[in-house]
Image (cartoon, rainbow, N blue to C red):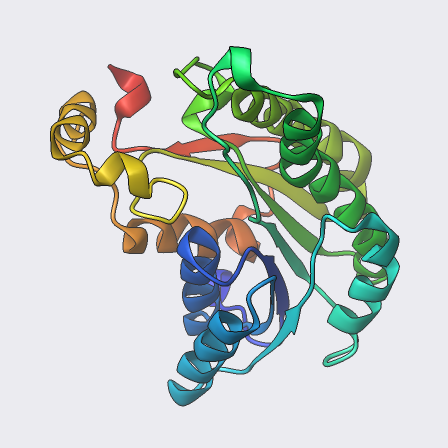
Length: 252
């Protein structure tokens, strides 16, 4: 369907070297988008780029550290270079240090808030002008179950993800009138590097799956439909929203 056809669109995905970011890359490529894969681990980015091009997609990669804000202008210029535009921005890079509240240092706090909250805004801010010129763009942020509920060893992470929900609303208020939709996904428990410690504990994993209405934890392919929807014309009248994709975890 043309509503969900991303042919001719270019997507920049941060945190693309693994997990949710890599899955978003696969989904958007299958929908026809060309990709700029951004992350810190060059080998993993190269492997994903090879996988996507081997399946008929178009992708390039950029190994860079977003936490070095002094390099942000250069990173944006390099991301724009291959196809001279970015239509879709997936702000997926993130960190969860899983520390008890008593152990969080000033540096831990800043590292978490910078990558999860500050960088998504300033990266979007730099890409919005060229989206505005075309009168269309999509920004997809990543919130969390912890955006609205507290989990142990997640104080700084939860604060950052609570901020993502309001950031997404504020982005929508600022830019949607120029045709730029801003939404967030809030995943439940999916097997990624960030949640590896959870899935290594079989009893905990089973407890979390029992908390869902569906009765299982997420599989990365479950993210595909929502990702393509929010990146496409199919969601043009949806903005400022955080959509939970958690198997009904928050419904119980």
